[in-house]
Length: 260
Image (cartoon, rainbow, N blue to C red):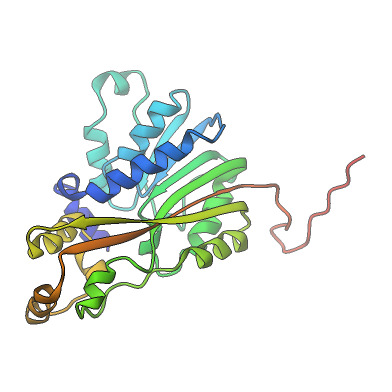
């Protein structure tokens, strides 16, 4: 999907209504969390709404904008003001895969990821990598698509839609990756489309049409869209978890701490 996301950079913002809405809800959740990070990272940053929100909230923290599609990072760079660049406050751009981040262990205090992790066939390696780069006491906050996403299209006969993990499985992955106190919840966000083809156009502009909807032929899509009620529901799985003290060493031995 890297090429799809790269091509979508120029038109992403005009179709990213869901990502902006989810980002606002993620930001509101940070109002209830006390944290003073020295380094923040938006992983899967797209054109940078998340890292700009983190910069606003934590102006003294080093901001890292991470994406595996280089054109997305160029869009982040273009939105930084001249003053930010002169003062060294513009986001640092990092072209990397979430499963192999070029950061030292324990070097990041807050990781934000908005609607990216569900594109991985198996998110567990990504969670392990995020656990590695977070400092003790660091926070991971994220949103992913859940299994009831676009249930209306399935009802109308769409085949090949991507299947997403439910929040219980995601919570289990967080524990398996070493995170402490994971908190999961979900909500549904529904859009009404006046024109059926607009849904397909939006997903194409986001660079996720084939990844989300599969590769049905146009004749099949005509049949599905004819029976579709024009509602498009997206199940949003919210999660956050903390990086606690390590309980297992890199070689697999249990770590036992004695307190005097």
